[in-house]
Length: 390
Image 1 (cartoon, rainbow, N blue to C red):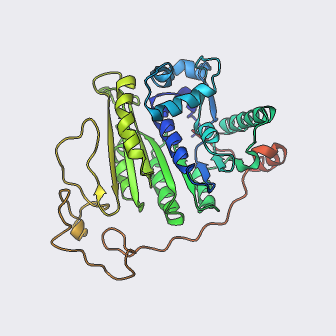
Image 2 (cartoon, rainbow, N blue to C red):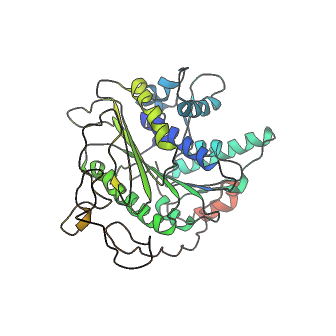
Image 3 (cartoon, rainbow, N blue to C red):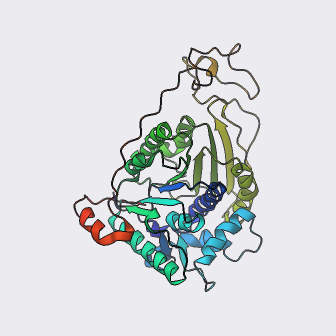
């Protein structure tokens, strides 16, 4: 359970996709004056040394962030991301790489809250220490520290997320990227999102996942498309043709529920560049698709997008789906207008089912420890059972 350590994979092509999109999501959230809560269900260590034994052994960053490091023709979205990485490497040499907690700390505003969960005991200790050093550096520079607006929990992020939704400000950005080292992680993500949307339907939920040959990975995006979110956006990046044995991760995806309206255009501008720079052979490509509960899956918008294909609504066609059977874009549902089964206008889900009321928020759980008060928190955490992370 605790075998996965992200230090072996830091800065690879999947991190590039995940973190440049994360930067864009934070920048969108920053446009409103109201503070928001950032929730990271699988935080990892926060910062990674690319000259460490783990990173050097895998060398994955060489085909990821290293290929962008000295480029002077970066699209704006990639420039924002690469400049953040350059900021933590002032010598100009690529030595350190940020995890998602560090990205959030750098791009989110001082008034925004960070709630970081990590199960791996070693990575939890590193995460706490890295943020202590960051806050100490800010204090030396006379910068405003985030202080208790950062809480680090040695806990299961799937469970911890429940107690935080809905957030006090009714604004939240959630990043979910478990290691997927066990097949049940795919189900855990889907179930956690289903419950989170019931508690807080308007939050932005970003899910990273590896595109692998295993059935759970191939079906994952389709399962997420059926969640009760108003809209979704799905993007995948493939850097090489998968080998005949199906081993290795050559492709990864980001699935965003309730995405910013600006994100699709940003991806269309950025993804062709990533394919060109990070691609390792002729199989390098990308795919972008979007949809919502009413229209279901839209046509893919990537380099391999082909002829028009039948698409379904948010529920797959079945003998019980009625007007939700397969159709071509532009065709009406069924043989005529859909009839409501009752209830107030606009309160039905796809397929004519009445919407269920949102579940009452769970009582907020006391964090395992606060990084700003390690002495007190250590005593509490010693009473808890150790856990893992990504």
